[in-house]
Image 1: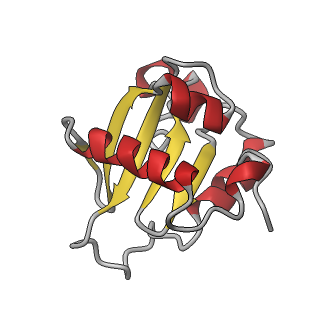
Image 2: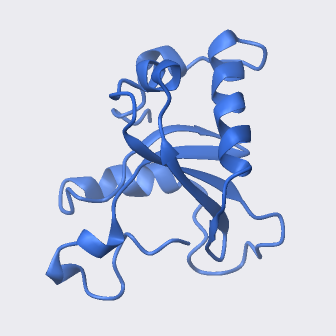
Length: 132
């Protein structure tokens, strides 16, 4: 199943494709910034540059979260999901403020940024905004 939030032009991107190279440069820049480390990912929040924003169908300067899996994360932990984008997509109808997965690759994902400090009061402490 294809997530509706992933622009169609990114669905068949292969290594060596110019848009893949553009995304990987953006991820490399993100990886050089301070990270908020969760149990399973290093999370980097930064504004989308104009070229990446256009590729992802967002406005330039919009904050995004780049998630890079931690190599030392144990895959047996219950919160480790094989397809986080599908989970976010599935709960989006009920929890419209959860992040959207804009693009994913085996070694990174780019999500829309959701400010955890501005989460709805009903979210409580076990909110979908908790970095993992």
